[in-house]
Length: 184
Image (cartoon, rainbow, N blue to C red; front, top):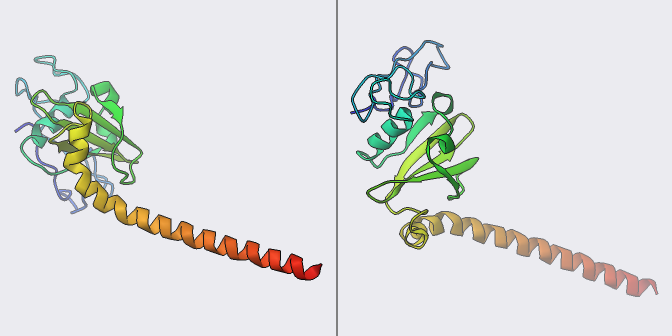
């Protein structure tokens, strides 16, 4: 194991924490993470620095990627704990709109890719079994049912609002035309 799993709560006050979060926002006490290099197993002092034993670049991101391969769950990571995704080999890309500021992807050697969603104070990182970078068509087919379900309802609601608005506009215009006729 490369990094301790994301704790549900602070060990001091039960506040929920992000992966690699350095201190608890509630009790302001520091949190110690046992993070090891995925290449050599050496303990890491700072997950942003290259491993001092083997030189592995971006060991924090690589530890997250390694842990994702063992689970299908999303890992929430403190943004200030890691370098920006593009510095770690991720590409700016698109994803389903979930309130994120940006999306990043990095293909994996064995297929699939790591997908990072960037929010205000954290990243949400998950594994896509079919990569959007290498196989955009397959990715769309694989994930389309879920995306369609999420987005389809929003599209229907938006179209309904647009039709209602245009109906009100037409009524107003016809009412103005009738008023102009009667004034003549």
